[in-house]
Image (cartoon, rainbow, N blue to C red; front, side, top):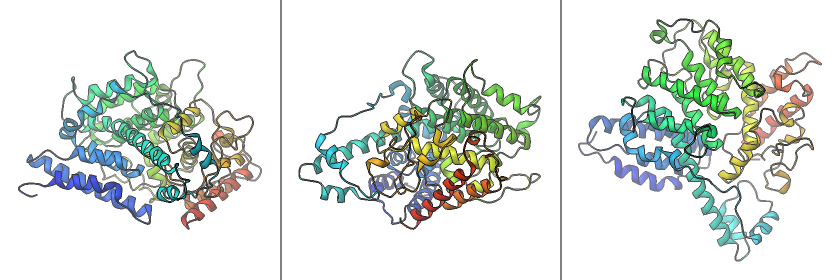
Length: 503
């Protein structure tokens, strides 16, 4: 509002001080940062309308690279993605990532003394780096600091890549540019062409980038027809590109995410549905067409379950009962009950951020729970390259035995220490090829939030409603003993209660 806005100075000060922001309660800090990001986005758009200075989108992007919280980074992507032409103009050079995609080493050589010393230290999960440095033998502390710096730099590169993948579909929806060269349309097409490496011209996107791009599509699909960034031309183009990407990808989480996006775009929405012919007459056939695979290729159990839920969403017109926009966001809050079917929604999103897991149909809650279990198993590790390596182990059309037959190897009640017995693959069954168990110890700073006690209790309650001696309702759980499954969720709820109380 000032005659001479000081946005860039304030943004630079904020960027400089961002890594030093601290709070005793991580949840409070995350909520506060998210509110700040929202105000930042409003200020950016206000300055852009005034045309007095360029809005500080580059500084907000840099904050996204520095921010460890997944929820805050998603909020940053949403604010930049609503920036339209100005945001794209300022960030265009950074968004052409498929042209310069980096091949990261999967293994790195470390000093053998540091490995030996670390293997003998049962560190508390919450230990600070300074405390570990102080306890390290002489000569090892500098090596440890060097490794921490290298890890943080790789982490920031990974956050940079992920932000770009989220932003491309969002910017396609918010720019006023028509489709031609040097626009988000062209850049998005170049990203999609790298999925699965089916076209010449560059290496395939790794799975973490592929998933992030699919999430960007779903963020854009959540905008309803009345949304200010939901232009008809852009929506049609995004839907076509998402379907193309779905045909190229075989990774289960990418396919599930894109299936949700295509379902949201297919929902009739007021004036946008006028003149449609044939749409919605056979949702099951439509979903089968989206998910079609070459003969002989099996569909992942989670994708099959999501497909059934998407059909229900199309039949009822109530996507908030059967879909979710972001796994971490919906699991972090209980939410409120959905409006009655005849009540007209007044917001601009199909599924608003306030929607929590209790809104979901019981079958959708069960799917969400096991999707998050598998993601938490795969996305553990301090290095992005390690997380990518474990995510690749799940890139197959079946589930690990710990989710489909025997949950005992998950052992969710492990203590808050890092020991050899808690490493991925140390507690797997002999017939397991995934190498992911046990479940990460409580208290570690994972990529996604812990499953809350209330959510775990709800899973236990859903199973308790099943008749005695019956099998679990979820198709992928049919070979799991019902009593064992109930015990697992009871232990998960106790784990969450202990984490909330500080161990």
